[in-house]
Image 1 (cartoon, rainbow, N blue to C red):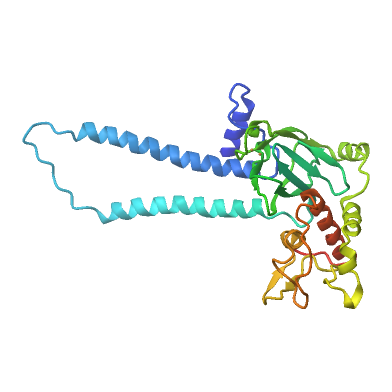
Image 2 (cartoon, protein in one colour):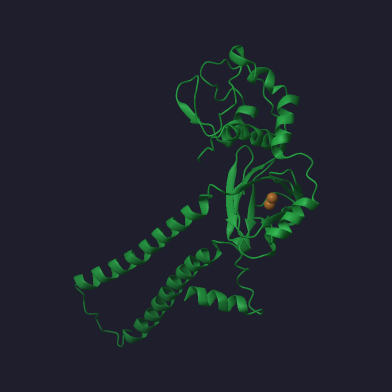
Length: 327
Ligand code: CUA
């Protein structure tokens, strides 16, 4: 029913209540939304109707009229406890299932990097193409965005995809989607971030696979993210400590991504993108067991985009050795 309703609403050009459904989760989000709205509307109407009806039906008809006391009804109590319980449990499990689905990117998703700043979106493709306030993606392929901010909190919002994720300074957040219909869709910043927050907008262009290949070919990339990362790895002299063999001052970074790393302070941490980023910008926060906290910080030297390139390179060091890390 909800699918029919949403199809109807979208077919009415005069009623722009709903944005296009253009991702694999859009109809699922709308179905839950219609359920919530439907339950809410039903009980709102029911309760207000009964309030009015009872107010009139059982109004005091004379000055000395006394109401009949009521001693309750177990059946009625159970009925009006169990029915709402069922309705909200449906909300809970449906919502939890959908949340889980929306938050976990498929392992075969293509990874892109997004940096938000006042007031623009900067996007890097794995092959090195870069875009500002535009995101070109192919239809039907899962896309995972790893995002961070250079300054304040932003929020990456594509209404037609029904996905939104805050973009925070100092850490990585993720968002994924599979676009299902070619076209152009709005990209908004959905977190108030200063004077030109309302101008921090862009468009997502969903292309047929062949058009997408043409777009990639027509946007000369120079070097890929991994190549750029490898270049920076030399430029920042990372290799002097991390590739010096057994006597090196820093741990080897081959096969580090996706592994658990033992820390000097005890305990272990998963070497995910967030950990690698922290180790570049705040190297002494989590020092690897067996090493001294001698690494200088690259805060202010490497931009967020460069850090993403170095991470892409470090990830490639694990991949090349035939070990695809599982998230
Ligand atoms: Cu960025 Cu609002």
